Length: 181
Image (tube, rainbow, N blue to C red; front, top):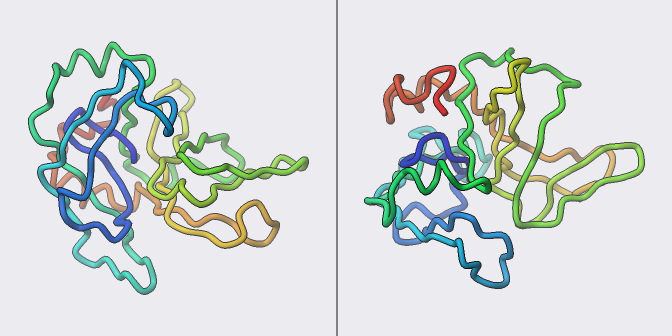
């Protein structure tokens, strides 16, 4: 899941179209135990891309809109464990060879040649790239893959820049400007 504003998050569908299927946990450092700084927020609305195909995973993207936050927005901005990412506006903003970071709750696989891949449990997690000014962008969302960490079987990501217009239509262009953090 990738935070783009305090109230909106980008995810892949994960076959859970109902808001009550989600609980957003902030600052969760260990998936095995609740931390003192963990905050829980409920989802008010799931906005699924209108051309999503569950068979091919085409247009595998959704937005989660949170209910009223149980804390102030300042709590999120003051928390070093939580950082929003901007929505990229161009599919050419980053290129092969640019360094990006993946995150998730699964087991990220890698090898000595430097290749890294996401694995089970990472679906919906962000692939975040920074531009030359150090601004973070949600370049991709982990969608699916086979044989994680094995050469010839790359992880598949939903390219967020492709959905810039769709995202801005739902949450407002002013909230996803170049520096929406």
